Length: 206
Image (cartoon, rainbow, N blue to C red):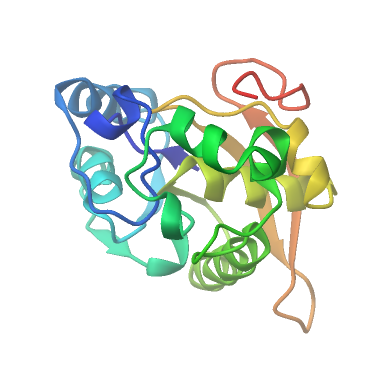
């Protein structure tokens, strides 16, 4: 799972959610770097959120593998509701009880909850694993979405997801995913960050 490259809203610390903000120059470079890191991996498929910042990060990965990007809105970022487009310090000032670690497990005013994102994202992962029961695939998605998939993989409840170290733009985690026999449930194992840092640390962005 690869986090999309940087956008201007990332750089200026604004809540992005499902606003379709494009990559900036740094983000386009991060997309190329992500493709280079995966160059030695024989990918069976490349999947992406349908938001342009994710698709444009996935394209160099797919191109280097001779594949097409398959988009799935299940991998979108959380709908930030009333927070979308606001500076993070303004959100913290106006909704102090919902900020800090709480933002990793509470519903956005007028938007989605992390539980809703986790449910739809895991359904998306199940579809990918059904299509590719063996081999490696890349899924380009968003920081929150990766956090809540990782929380499920690590056996954390939603409050525990606040303990997971956030991924920087262009960062990636690797994990094994299998369909449980006779079910649509996904079994996960061996979650590792590509940068070598541990996953289970207090979130540095709290």
